[in-house]
Image (cartoon, rainbow, N blue to C red; front, top):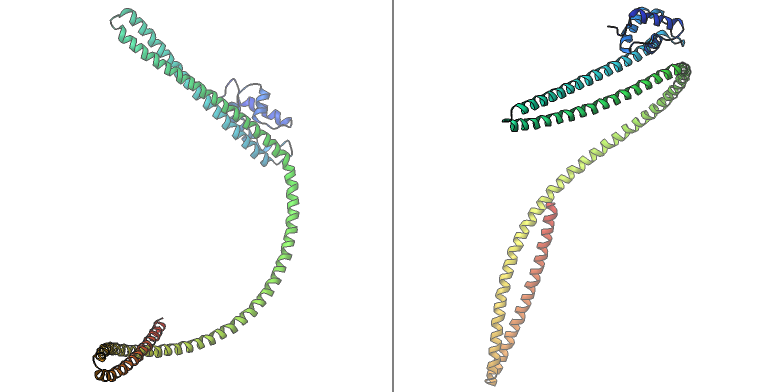
Length: 355
């Protein structure tokens, strides 16, 4: 519903006057021409008039009607949303303030009733005093809430001012858009010329790329032939490796047989080494007995010369036998060392075969 006596006919007449004067029929221009009315009242009427007279409205700046209608619709939509938000915030703030006032009036009325009751009922004065204090605390809380609501209202007003500044910036952006429209047309023409030049450059680049591709294809074909030759060589080498592998497998079987024989020989040598060790022990016992006999003979030499002569002959025999025993011991020792070296070599061969 229109406010302050503003009618649709008045808005339509004002819009027609602005168009006749070569100006755009905006909400601000209609409101300035009428000298009254709010944007929320004028906006729907002006939108209705534009819908009815869309084909008659021409852009005063020489812009296409579709572009001007789109920009104007965007501007009016933003203006309507801003006005609706302002109305909503104001309504909410007025409602909250009314609630706070009602609460304050109720608290004041409660205080007045309490004072009357205190004058007439001294018996319940203490209880009523306590209730009065509670009501005072409630009133203080309500007053504090009212102060908070007042701060919120101030903040909302600040937001409205910020939105007003944003609205002004949008109007400036619209003006800049209208100024830059001609520059945009020039840039479109320049861009088309540049695109034609780019197309020609791309065609030449594609031709060069096709030439390079043909050259690379020939090189790849030559490389493919070389790869086929290399593949044949690798197949030949693979055949040779298979033959070598078969030979290595046969050699491994032979080495396994050699290792088995070596282990048998090692077992035999270990048995012989045990026999030689026992023989060495026996010879050492014999040598010890001969040494004892030699000592007995030397003692007998001290008893008589005749016995000395006999003992000397026996001593020579004992010493001869002792030397023979020592020689046999050395021979057995050397044989033991030789057998130990043979065992060590056989163990190395076994380790090499296992690895």
